[in-house]
Length: 477
Image 1 (tube, helix red, strand yellow):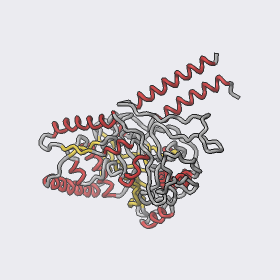
Image 2 (cartoon, rainbow, N blue to C red; image 1 turned 60 degrees about the vertical axis):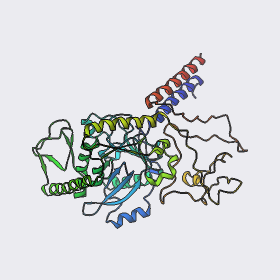
Image 3 (cartoon, rainbow, N blue to C red; image 1 turned 180 degrees about the horizontal axis):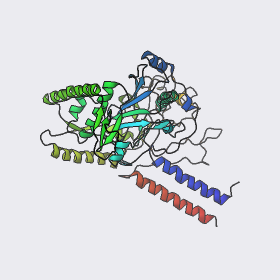
Image 4 (tube, rainbow, N blue to C red; image 1 turned 90 degrees about the vertical axis):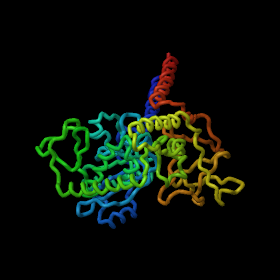
């Protein structure tokens, strides 16, 4: 049995560890044994869809994501060795801006070509289930980009990760799990700022990131032509696709590219596609499509979740929506400087003043419009999602919708749990009469500070907890 002074110190140190975990956003560094949720079977409907395209649950899988459209696509390999589109999942939350991840803490969801291995699967994630996408890759390292632990996970909260609902990540995780069980060694994940169409590239033809995005388009074109995993290389700080060094050497991310050997037929088809797209981009520009730079307060989410935005992380940023800043076609350098200044002003305004904590979504229907509010029962949405009996709702809080309440949500997309990036709500225990017990205090919600950085917040929390430890230590003597 632990002595009382040591137990106090241990508890205080555990608080510091917990606080550090919460402030780290979606970062997770430990991987745990299998859990029941990680072993959930694939839905029969998904298995039927795989069979319909000539694939199976154990066949290899490939993932493609698009930030602007907030979509995650699943592709499955057919018997002929080529991938076919299976289904899309609407993304519940992504953070940052369009463009690559550059440094630790920039809230950017990375863009590029990544590799997910079995070792990157986390069956006991704090975000329901998760897997690491493999950032930074060879290109990121060559460019000096920093950061790591970028996940696809549940909970609908993002600080640089691809965030889904818990039900969605359960299915995505199961798809990956079965592919690994079938012998796949690594799942390629292609992360794009948007669908690499001529229409989008015409719109963003003057964006500061267009040089990088043209590299990603070349990789996308290689996949569209072959419907196979794209072979990746990095040299001269650039991606090289479906090519190998002709002299048998190895790629060096920062060194000059060696002579390359490619499949002539594939490259001919890729070049033809690029030529068609370039002609379409020029046509759209001639028709008056204005080049723009899009700025977000802090990322976005799929339109299917618009009515449930208050359940996602940073709902006040979502409410602002993206802003398109027009770029001057004839004065691109000056326009970029002006756009950068405007973008910085928009982001500063969005981050310096955060609105109050979001109120629960109130659903008014015939079932909930009665004078006396209904109490949540075991058949409520809360119970169906979490499997437990919810506590009695307070009088001033709208009741959670029951199974008889019409909930405005897209088909097949469950209501995400209402959570916060910095803290997770903990219900107070109640006595036999249903009143909250005050013997165990629930943590107070984290109040947003003006222009406060995650590092500053972490330092303040750590300082407070160190003072607490010091007080405890003095009381032991």
